[in-house]
Image 1: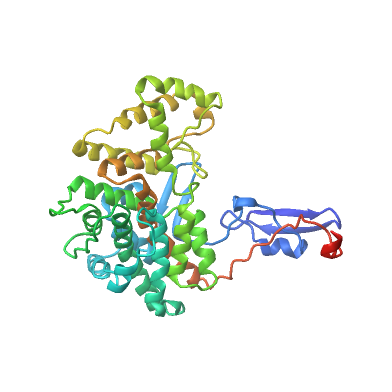
Image 2 (image 1 turned 120 degrees about the vertical axis):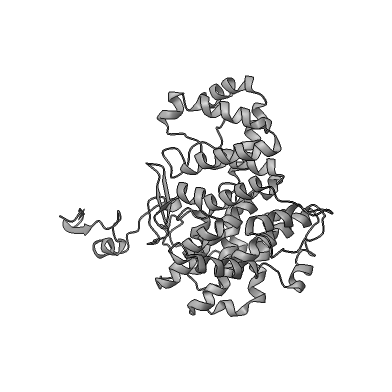
Length: 421
């Protein structure tokens, strides 16, 4: 028997039965009975704005799957570009398909020289790299005006390849501008993650990428690649619903990610660990949180009500990086904080478990990334997800996003001349 709900308009006694399909109900059915009555849902926390086949997220059970594949299997066995292919095309590639995909992306990493050379001239010497990245992505739309032909599937795919390819180049360029270093050109002989690390960190002598760093970078990008309808993905879809080009849509997503509520959580974790200072202070800090005098950063999630599956993966990757770099002193504090919190009923009852941000900042910092680059790294990883959603939305021929509002302002008023106010 099909699941359904029945609503009653108590003003008229009218009844309407609405089927429950894929865990949701069709708002168009509600409008049949309640025209002009809108759902009030600030933050859209209980509203579905899309049907999507890209990512399944079950927060109650700590499940994250890309196109049906568990995130644990992908992080262990795939590369980032293989996962990017999966998100965009819907299936894991054959070897021939992967080789062509990697070749295309590798050979689109370069920026137009006029764009690259002049891109940062207008910015202050210490401009935040995320601001530079956001404006750089938007600026690419002026170099590829054909991207505006969003009705052509082949053209859309060309722009998707370009964006995935150029994001690490834009990101590394933004970093080097911020620290006053010269630009390092992409190296087509390197894989995606190694090429990015070289563009970031090569100074003078050739930069040798340690295998543990390459693997950790790939894992971190995979874990960030998509997370269904979050703030930045929603921003990309909303802007894309106006049929804006993909560069503008991804720039909008970058702008949303720039906000500290979305992309800055791992930086907040580092600040918290610094404020704790030593292992001896962990118990006192936990008690202060329970008393309402502090916040436990990197624990809990808007969606996950269980252990974030990405956190367990990233914790293992952290240990491999620290074997190369030496242990980050914050790691011992983080491990003890996790141990204390996960044995305390106060946090267990509130379902406050470590999330992906709890360990990611520690890895990034140990690999040499400044805090200002953390959100930029997030953006590189999330780009295939943003583009997969943008492309899916266009394939669905979705309507332009246009939410309603509940007006709470003044009723009609007579205009008063300025000399009588």
